[in-house]
Image (cartoon, rainbow, N blue to C red; front, side, top):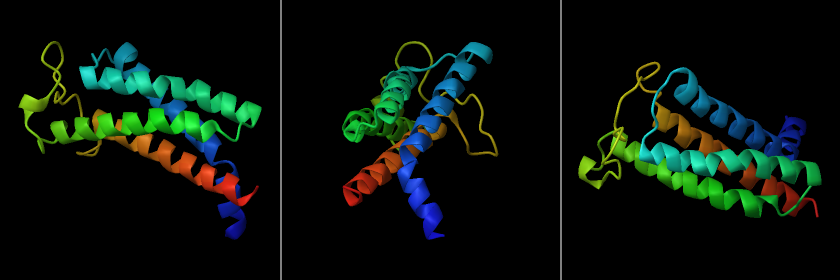
Length: 145
C-alpha cells in the first residue's frame, strides 16, 4: 500500500492536470453542447480553471519544482468563488448577496444528478481536488530534496 501512496504523491500533479482538463471540458460541454448559459460566478470560475491546464502541463513538462506556487493561487481563488457560489445556490446566504443581477441567476437549477450533484458542486469539487493534489505534490517535493 505504501508503494501506491508514494506513487500517488509523485504523480499528484498529473492528477491535478487531469482534473483541470475534465473540469474545462465539462464546462464547455454544458455551455456549447447543452446550451446552458453560465452565470457570472461560473464565468469567474472558468477564468480561473482554464489556465490551470496549461500552467500544470508546463510544470509537469519542465519538472518545475515551483509549479505549486503558480497553480495554488488560481485554484484557491477559484475554490473561494465556488464555495461562495454553492452557499448562494443552496440558500445558505441570501440572494441579495448574489453578483448575478443581469442574465442567468447564480441560483438557476439546471439539473441535479442523483438529487444533489449540481454544476456549482462539481466546480467546488474540481478545485478541491486540484488544491489537494498540488499540496500533496508540494509535500512530496519537500520530502525528496
